[in-house]
Amino acid sequence: PVQYVIRPKSDRNHDYRGYGGLVAAGVLKKGDEVMVLPSGLTSTVTGVDLAGTEVEEAFPPMSVTLRLADDLDISRGDMICREHNQPTVSQDVDAMVVWMTQSSRLRPGAKYTVKHTTRTARALVKDLQYRLDVNTLHRDESASELTLNEIGRVSLRMTQPLFIDEYRRNRTTGSFILMDEGTGTTVAGGMIVGSV
Image (cartoon, rainbow, N blue to C red; front, side, top):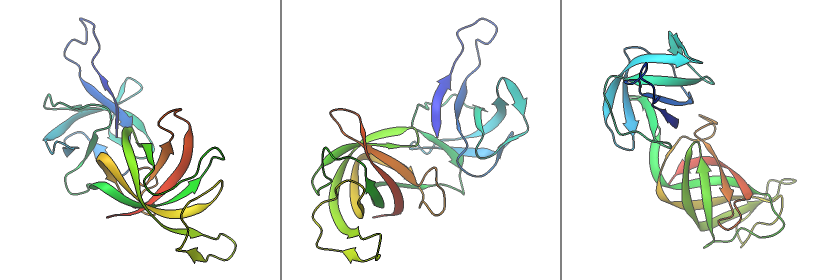
């Protein structure tokens, strides 16, 4: 996930353009062909920098700066990946969430801000499929809300696509938080179990 576009405003580095972020999966090195999501544009890695020093390769959980052969329109929240190792691009996800606030309850129809990797979007709770009893593992499919410390499976619809994997495959691209739109406080943590 791209966290920051680095373009120094100095004469010495006037042509430097790098894309900083956390390596979520795989290995990237100079010469690799990569794809940028959501645009689908491709380029070649011309260098990998770590703390101002060029390194041979980048792998999880390193935070690095990638330099690309082409001057592409890339911004925070975009994702640079290998063409044959892409995450799923989806606006709809199924997830297990734990509700973390007493001040409100999670109900179908509620709207939140979702923070997933470096991407932020608005989310609508389309459905609460069930509430999970952590003591018996019973699924209460008649549940209409989640309260403090309750866990449930929900279907969410985002205002823009997210680049996701199932949590069991990748914890970085498979997790998110929900925030109250008014206060910005975190109200839930989630693990993606699939796209809809």
